[in-house]
Length: 409
Image (cartoon, rainbow, N blue to C red; front, side, top):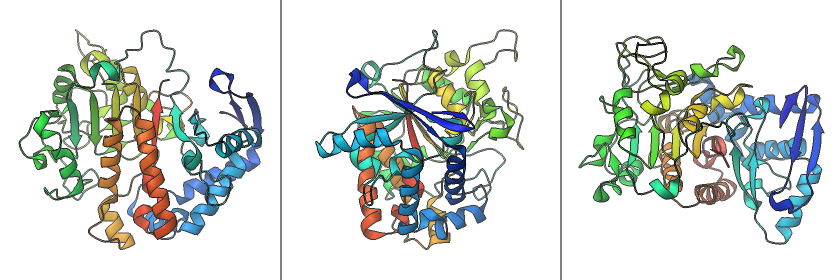
């Protein structure tokens, strides 16, 4: 897809399975539907989160389904829809790999409903292609999953950000963790095989650590890793700034540590610029970013707008940094993510449901699977079926459709 006033869409089939196509969608149709999606998404403030969980279109099944049908009518070209329908009636499930334009980067493609009750995720496995400028880079480091899958899993789970209380803007995203919660139980399955980094004897010890700064992360990744699982805070750069490299990952880094991002209180975030440039221009013996932080084959960035650089014409944010550092596949957030506490406080959800933890478990399980896209899509189809049957806010695609899985091939 390409933005040029109107939205230009082209598609082709691998091995020339069917005819390629080109379509032009008028700007007067694209802008209203994009604005409608953005209005339904959580905002950065508590008021915005509450609205999305209570009165927004993702909070009600009928409203959300109407939005999904409107998205399909506007953004799914008729020629492509016809080809997909032909495959569907023949019982063939294709894999669709979108390369959205910046304007359409937050569209949840999986939800498109070409027919009432039928979603794109029901008839295809959906992922996103990395921005074209990243894929052909001649010096792009790559780490094969097949060769590294037995290596440890590096986890950074809700790290303590210096200078910020647990209930502050950069505080805890998971809340107080206990051994009987879904994510702790899930993480515990790695302990018997010594697959987890940091190595711990109790899964609860992995959460809210104070020692996981950029130096720790560099050491853990350089020791060898199959995957990286990050759950915490990301501060995305505003698209109008044109500076996607300013996207920031919040670890346990103090303000005294070296880096490109300015300090926030007693904390210095790890920026995409750091991950790409390393210490270039910062000291007399600079090191390249991918040498300091060699990114493993698969990465999950479970944080608000962690894939936000897709909204830029020039993609140099955290997603680009992960791919440039060696990742083959990255799952990242398209928009701000409501926490489990937000579901309970604003939507009155039961305390025995933990939607964010459930999503983290599903994404992490998929990343350990030979086909992570198909694995995650199976889980999302289960959530879609539950949303249709139960209409519970905990099953709304507001959270499980927030994640895009981006691949380089």
